[in-house]
Every structure is written in C-alpha cells, then in structure tokens.
Length: 151
Image 1 (spheres, helix red, strand yellow):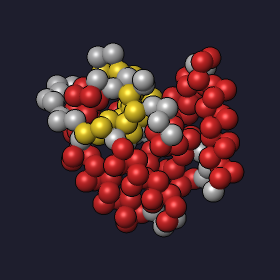
Image 2 (cartoon, helix red, strand yellow):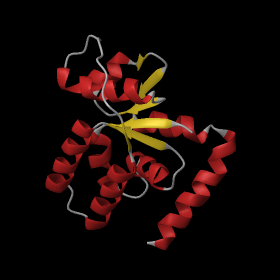
Image 3 (tube, helix red, strand yellow):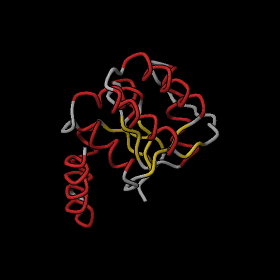
C-alpha cells in the first residue's frame, strides 16, 4: 500500500471543494486506498490549525478522522539542507514511516525533491501519478464518486 505524509497545507487546502486535489487525496486515506503516516508533533499541529482555520464542520470531522487513522511513527533525525527548518519534522515523519510520498504545497520542501526513495510532490502531481496507476484509477474514481453522492 502506498504510504504518504500530508503537509498541513494539504489538509487546510482540502476546503477548496470536493474536486480539489487535496480533498481527493484526503478521501483516498479515508477510504483506505492509501495509508497516512504522521508523528505526534505533526498531529498536534494539524489539530490546532484545523480547529482555527477550517469552518466547514463536515471537512473538520473528515480531517479529524484522518488524524485518528494515520499511523503514528516516532520521528528520526534527518540531515538535509532546507531553508525552513520547521519542515524538518515532515521529512522526519517520511523517513521514520518509510513513506513513499510527502505531499505538500510548500516550496521549501518541493525544492528538496525527494529524500531517500520518497518523492516530494504537490497534490496535483501526486494525483496525476495516482491516476496513471492502471490497477487503481477506475476503482478510485468510482469510490470517490460514490462518496460524493453519499453526502
């Protein structure tokens, strides 16, 4: 199963609507199609920011479900040159959880490009990759559409 670390900005940007890439990726986690990796520190930060910045109660519940579903890992030390040292905590989660992807809109992280075998990409780039996965693409859209019409 694909393992991902979602930056807080991806969760916050899920409020752009059902068709936004961040919301689609959040739904992949919630439907069990991909697995989220998180550390306690990142979870606490996410909870705080979601409470402050998300007004849509349904989205807030979805993000809280995501946070409870995410696999918690103990961060590892990471040595990488990055302009914003606050972002190290996400790289530490990627390394500790052996995530396949770090999904973010943060330019500092995107400039890193990858860490070990983990790719760092925007939600749009991850979604494009996901859609190219022949075995998953049709199933993903069907599940996504079913969930859209359930609400």
